[in-house]
Image (cartoon, rainbow, N blue to C red):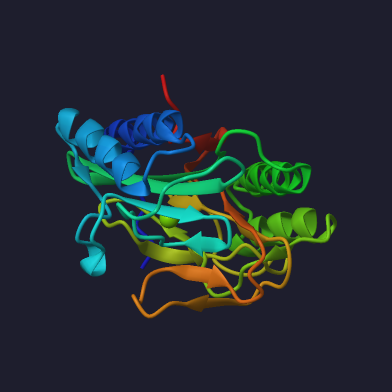
Length: 250
Ligand code: MG
């Protein structure tokens, strides 16, 4: 069931989204060669807690950390670890959400660690841009398929692939709500977008094939071919005045 939020609920949710966005910024500032993914997770958790909020992911489905930190060929759901030391040239996807006053915000960004290769930078640029292509289609009266199609077209025109096994989602009082928001699709198909819907659009884009596999820890999701992956996400509200990006910093 798709939950439509009132204006009052949207303004409360905006607070959770802002905290999520700021937590992501703080995470990005911590991404440096020599830093462990565990340290980044700690910075994120402390920041969220300092705002009086709760990390949305901590304990969600048993996830053991506050942020998913996914390096290089890891697409999503990487578990922060004291053993994982970032090095120059890594690309580091951080996905983080905060729960505040009854609502979640959810966002992700792939950060370069030091100087990265031109190939890696091109993947990051294309993935980030594909998110904005999707957001442009998040208009009242459009359908979910319009968003996915816009993302997919942009990505595939650059010879990258869009992950199929994981998708974006509604977000609100629950971290994952209806509808699913695939990063691929057919224009004019799927759930119709109406004002008050809040969705997380989150393209996961790979350099090679879109096939992924989940490792034995049951979280870490990697590209099957070992090639790089990137992940960008915003929480968006559908409004009468077009898409509103909720996960922005002040
Ligand atoms: Mg999400």
